[in-house]
Length: 107
Image (cartoon, rainbow, N blue to C red; front, side):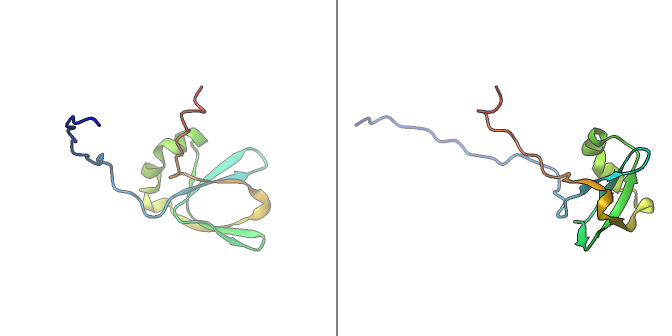
């Protein structure tokens, strides 16, 4: 048996900004000419054949929206509540979720 002493240090939690209790969602919409993006500030409500959402439209690309969506939704003047027909929805993405890949996948 080993009789060596071990020193244990204190553990601190990293400082982070305030967490938004409601995550934002990026709704990608099919349009005749191009793709539209809508940032929903609440979880979209799924009705029959429609999706109800409250938020803002954005002209930015999907990558730019992912980086700056907090600044975009802080402009309260542009917030609308809208119903989208379900056949126009391409995808709905949670903007607050950021999964870290396990170390075994990063090869």
